[in-house]
Length: 339
Image 1 (cartoon, rainbow, N blue to C red):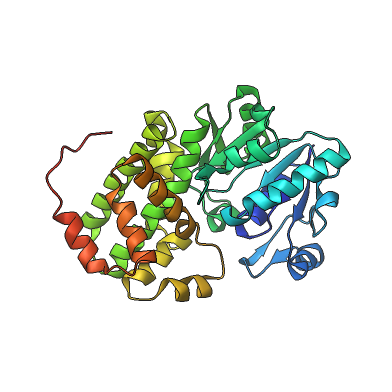
Image 2: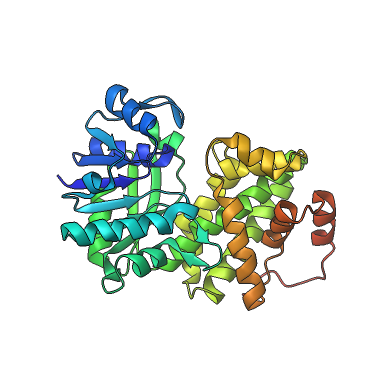
């Protein structure tokens, strides 16, 4: 049994925390909303994020970061990208105070705008600049709603340390969640982050009443963009994007109503404004943040990412969806396979 601190008690954090408690671990969830913490502790529910579902009663919640981290052998980050760095800074302060060096895991799928850093890079910068092998990323085709119902799920866990990846594999795996280790840390992270942008585009097509051919084309060409960015900017391994953190995560996020990014895109396709969508979604739409970083990366390195760039223009430059689709379909002919 391990003491595990889960930072972030939204839908995915609550589900992963409950799962880790199911697996026999001592789990403390950290969040900054007192009413959510109280609900988890009293009723073992989190109705705002996960309706009609109960957490393992052995998973408790607190708003005290030092209490959550005290004695923790593992710290799992399940936070919105925009909050990731500030929490990481605070974690470093607490760890320095209490004198421990736990294993760090990120389950956040995003790229930080401005710095264009992956979450594992943020953890390395802010907490473990000399111990980067103690950082692990988990990513793959997984919605909190499905894992909560113990649907069969397989995801990847990646680290520069094979031993730490295997430790996380054993920690999370059970009869409904299976983890596969992967040594391509940046590739696993890029796949999980950028697929959110493609999922917004997939939702837009549905909102515009396009059919299966369009969706298949979008996902396939979207995977080409993810791979191109991962290989050319981050130095990822191309084969990673044929795995769970690449095509696997892309399929589920581009086709499921449980995907907030897909739902946001569908509403964009139906003519709703981004401000309206974000205000009424109730949870973070990571694609709306990540698309900014992807736009900056594509511009900086002149990487061909027409789908991602179109999503950026629709979201932040008030571009017309129909005109963007028309321009994309009218681009000059190109070979299919190119990096």
